[in-house]
Image (cartoon, rainbow over all chains, first blue to last red):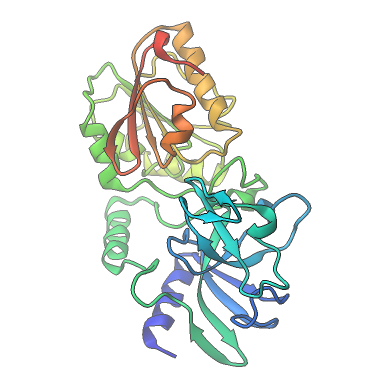
Length: 208
Length: 124
């Protein structure tokens, strides 16, 4: 097992970003078999690869997690349907056994909850990360964030999911901070006087 | 965003957060600005926008059912006290927003949009 993958899994686990899924069902054969274990990142997938959809977000009545592959992005046409911005097309690798976008239609991007990083099968770990580009952990950014929190005595890191507090994910999204540079750019671009009052809807931990 | 906003000369900075643990952390994070910053633990869809608010930031933390309610609160506040509100949004699809507002947003950064709202020009 490569050191890089191990480090990434460890780092993501420490950031509470790691999701471990037991595979059941045959919709992703031959890529994934029942009893395989998937290590996933909760970051939103950006590229075409195996992904996990969350239980609460699936069409009504469906209560299991689904592992599918993104096979179409906005603008593509699948089954005579043009995929709208904000949606993707997902399919299982095993077309015969899989229920997916061919029945559901395009899926909102918000419904993609995790992206597969690695697979564990009979003691052997396989790297599932895309070769060239993918949701890699940005070590430099990570170090800067840790230092920023520590030096200011604040807590800003980690993803908080509202479903852990009993809120439905369809009405409240997981909390991610706005990037600092974006926040600063926004406030630089408008004129602010001491008369102004700022209101942040959904402020999270307050950092951004 | 609150901590960044506190670096600017706002008279008051208000945060609204639904989840208690996040609100508690936010309070700790802004504890050094006790007079200028307030955190409310409330549901954004029912929290009335303070009528003194002039800059409003909406992050994409809301689903399709809550977002219209948030804009309705802004609209109500504008009706109560006509004024200019600058609305900043991040991570919300322009398509979603243009169904609320007639005007074109100013694009500040990737997916960061600015709307300047005036009472007559808001349509929800």
